[in-house]
Image 1: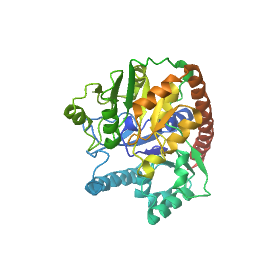
Image 2: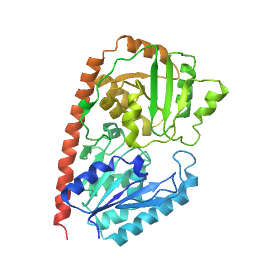
Image 3: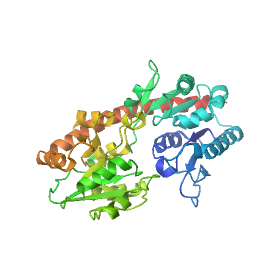
Image 4: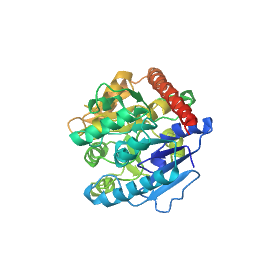
Length: 362
C-alpha cells in the first residue's frame, strides 16, 4: 500500500510539474505512485513508483476518435485506486478528476489535491458544476494561471502554482543579442499551425534570423511542408528532447517563440512553460496579443506581444532589439521570479499541511 497516488494525463516528460509534489512527499517520508499517460512512446518503461498507461493518442485532432482510449485510461485509473488503498490523491487537470469524481467524493473527500492545468470544457454548464463540486470537496485546489479565474467558479480559494524548477536563476545571465544573427526558438509540443506557418513565412526572407523548433509535432501541424513548398531554408526542426537538455537548448536561443492561437480560453488564459524559461534562462519572449500571457509579459517587461496575422513581426523584433538593455531585462526577470517563488512558498505550506493530514490518517 502506498500513501498517495498522483494521476496525470500526460507522459512523465510532459508532466514535470509533478516533481514539485513528489519532492515534498519524499522529504516527508510518504510513499507514492504516479500514473502517467504515455501517448507516443509505446516502448517507454515505467520507472520506480511509476504506473504507465500506454496507448497512442496524440494531442489535437478529432476528440470523438479518442473516446475509446480515454475510457480505457479511466478504467486503468479507477482500477489502480480501488486496488491501491491510498490515503490521498493528487489529480492533475480536470478531465481525469471528472473520470473519478465519484471516488474522490465518496472515498477521498477533503483528502485530494485538485491541480488544474488548463481550460477544458468549463463553458459547458454541466461540466462547470462538476468542476465546482470537485473544487469544494478537495483539500485544496491549485491553478497554474490566474488567467483561469476567467472561467472557474468565483469566490473559491485557489493556490497558484508555477511550472518551474526550483533552480537558482542567478546561474544564468542575460546576454547581448546580435541583430545580424538572431536565433528564435520554439521549445515544447509544436502546435498552432496557422500562427507558426505565418511566422515562418514572415521570417523566411530574413537573412539575419534563424527559426528553431524543438519538440514533437501535434496532429495537423506540418510546418516542414511549409518550408519545403516555399523553399525556406532558415528554419530547423530538431525533434523530441528531454527536459534535462533545456539548458543547452536555451544557450543557443536568443528569442523565445511563444506565439499561440487566440481563439479559445485554453490558449488565452494559460501560462506556458516558455514564460518561466524566459525568466530563468534570461531570453526575451514573443507572445500573442489579447492573452493573459501578453498581460504578464507587458507587466514584467519580459518581451513583447504581436498579432502575427496583422503585424510585421520582423519589424517589431528589430524595434524591440533597438531598445533592448540586457541589464534591465535581467532585473525584470528577477522581479517576476520573486513573485513566482512567493506563490510557490504558499503552495508548499499547503502541501505540507496535506502531508501531515495523510500521516495522521489510518
